[in-house]
Image (cartoon, rainbow, N blue to C red; front, top):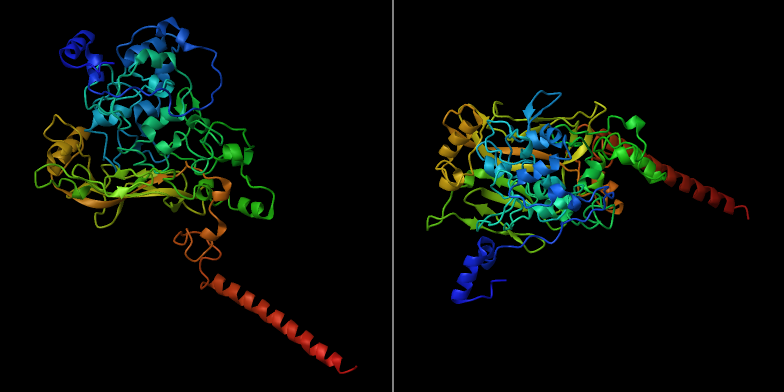
Length: 555
């Protein structure tokens, strides 16, 4: 270690030992010792540390991929046809063109115009322009992001998918927001195995710009959760990897927020543990998962109306990591008296960490922990408000409208995170807009110049979409299905939490909830029945008393 060397001797040693020593002298972070999650997997038939193709020094991620493809000859083509690589999805029912490369969201807005930042989590290397398809050379696929089991592989936060390599530029961050370390590509390549929770979570837990910002039920708490947080992923529970439910075939994964299985389409054929082709609760637990008791039988009667998640995920953002619940972009751009950006941290997480409540770059925020979901009928189909969709700015705009009908036989009552936002729109054409927020070397990025006019114009140009030149801000909702953080059975939503006048689903249409309204006709009828029963009991008691007194007169 050179951190103890002083004076000219230290300087000479640094010169002789090169850039990596310089990074160590500057206090560069060290790579993690191992993976963040320990998930038992089936023993492999191959020890990759013994493969000659991997016993070399690699100078880039694509070099590792080339070595992988010397054996796994079809993997590149499979990955390149997956949504993880394409970021493009045409909905089979609605025909909408979705995927990360197309949609507008209520968080950082859009990928278009912000590519090197947003594509840092792409399952490939070097995608820097959404007007072009992802890189097509075979070596552009990133094998390590999903298969590294050394725990020290990562990507830089603004590197279009590339990992930080020695020497790491000071100030470089990883996709999880940590200070970047130099990745040992050979060590990563020789460690490969089936994905663990950390492989998936290093991207998906940090969507929207930070830990649990976006989804609400996907956070760093799931790396090694307690059973109280998630019975499936907890090492004290089932210790499942994400791929236990999100099963894959030729690198295509089951489960998509663009086309959800709101109910299992093959429920009539389900036997517990029999089907592994869809990410549904029923594919393992069946349609009658509750025990054959009086209460269990009644709970099983609910499965044709309720998604399993509705009862078994009573709150999201559990485990000590808050989620962002409100994001108001309209207040962004304020600077301090010194002309510098402002950062306020007025929300304290339960673990003591202070989270930002205002940033000049992003506006105002609200956060929440142990958040009760929003409930809605859901048939699995979502219609997005894309750039060409005309909105009504006088009303709250739904960025993604969830569909469902209680009478269709498919829809179930699902739990959602409903994100409240305020974001930019074209005030003349009444369209949501793409925004160019990231770009430290440009004069149009909002985070550089705090000029919404230029940032929107640049974002719309990058997306190839018409812009009138006039903008405003509109209130929005965005919905995220809640499917993770399944609580222990004894922590499930209790009957009385819904069957009450002020219950969880009091505002939900399309269903009669006994106990929610005692003043409607069914409630009044129930009262009359109870009153009649009470009068009957009183009358019966009075008759017995009267009859008893008459009998006493014949002593």
